[in-house]
Image (cartoon, rainbow, N blue to C red):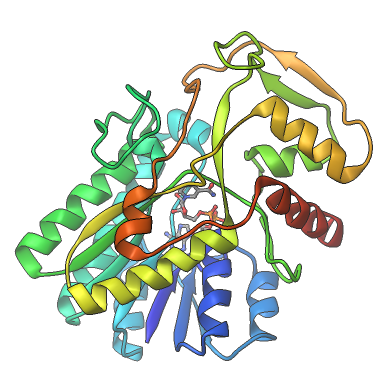
Length: 323
Ligand SMILES: NC(=O)c1ccc[n+]([C@@H]2O[C@H](COP(=O)([O-])OP(=O)(O)OC[C@H]3O[C@@H](n4cnc5c(N)ncnc54)[C@H](O)[C@@H]3O)[C@@H](O)[C@H]2O)c1
C-alpha cells in the first residue's frame, strides 16, 4: 500500500488520482490545514481508498497510521509552501516541513518502510549560476522554504546511509494546470501562484518588474503540467522497486515563458482583456528559472507532453467550475 501525505492538497490529489486510475492501493494522510475535504470527496467518486486526518507534527498521528496500514512506499507531498510566509515565519516552516518529515522518517524506520518519493523544489538551487538548471547545480536556497526542502534532502541521504531508506527527490519547477476532467484542481488559500492569480479576476493582476534582461522585461519561468508531473511519481516508485537506489530528478517542461507571455496566453484562452499593473521588482525573484530534465527522461523514462496552453485551459475550466 502507498501512503500519500498531503493528498488533499493540489499536487498530492492529482497524484492520488493517477494511482487510483491505475488501481493501486493508497491511503491519504492530510491535516486539512491547507487541503480540502471536498477534494477527498471528489477522489472518493473515482476509487476506493482510506483518508486519515492527522498532522505529521504529531508523532502519535504518524505512528498510528503506520500501525494501522501495511505501508510499502511513501509519497510525501505534505508541507507548507508559501515562500513569502516562510521569510516572515521561518520557524513555522522548519517545524512543519523538517520536523514533520523527521516524524515520518522515524516511523518508517520503526515500521520497516524503505521507500519514499519526496516533493522537492527548484527553490533549493537559489539564484541560477547557469541555465538550464541541472541536478548538479549549486544548492543555495534564498528563502527559508527552499532551505527546509534542502534540509529534508540532506536528512533523506542520512536515513539512506544509516537505515537503508531509499528516496527519490523530485525537484519540481512551476506546477500548473488541473485534472483534464475538472474533478480536482489547484486550490490554495491564499493563492500565490501565477496562473490561478491571472485567472482570478477579483483584483488587478500585478506584474513584478518589467525591466529584467529578458525578451519582454518580465521574469521567465518553467511551467510543468500537473498531470505530466504526477506520472513521474509512478515512475519513481517503479524505479525504487527495481533499482533500490536513491536519486534526485528535476521536473520541468524545459521551456521558459515570461510572465507577460503567460498573461497573453491566458487572455487568448479566456477571450477577453485582463487588467494588470506593473509593480517594482520583488526581492528574491530569480530572473530566469528553467529546468534541464534530461536525467528524469533518461533514467525514469519520464516525459512532459502537455503545453502551457493546455495547463492554462484546464486551470481555467477548474477556476470556472470551482468559483
Ligand atoms: N505547487 C508547486 O508549484 C510546487 C513547486 C515545487 C514543489 N512543490 C511541493 O509540492 C508539495 C505539494 O504542493 P501543493 O502545491 O500541492 O501544496 P498544497 O498546500 O496544496 O498541499 C500540501 C498539503 O499538505 C498538507 N499538510 C501540510 N502540512 C501538513 C502536516 N504537518 N501534516 C499533514 N498534512 C499537512 C496540507 O493540508 C495540504 O493539503 C509541497 O511539498 C510543495 O513544497 C510544489
